[in-house]
Image (cartoon, rainbow, N blue to C red; front, top):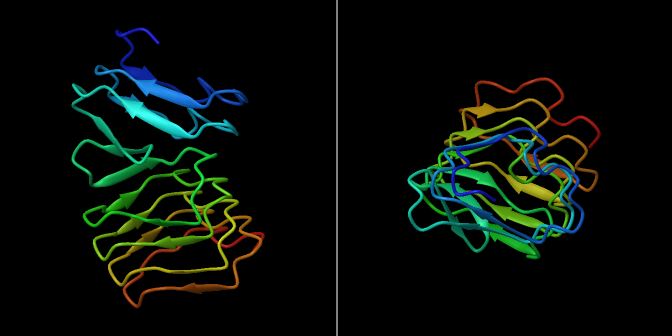
Length: 166
């Protein structure tokens, strides 16, 4: 990818079935939620160390300030994933179709779960921390194995189709 790219738009790399690793250059400041849609072999993101917008941990993409989880690669293999303390937002589509992860542990700093954030995931249960106040539309859509979702008392907004297809 050119070092001059500043934005990665919707479906830019959609359905690139053989893409395993993706390098994000220093000048990239915007990545659309569907930029890597259906990249079934994507195992990790790597970010230029001079990026002022993004960083990675264990191949997962975050904002540089580590307050937002941007995207988990679909083919990341982990039985469980602990979202780091300090994360306030799990962005739209962040874990969509990450079917290898069976258990998620969410930090008490989390306030917002974006639309389709966990769509088509395989976890059987998930506990949302008391700090979550917003759950986006279709956040847990098509989570066929989901048997238990524990909502915090402070949740004040749950969008349409949040648990559709569960």
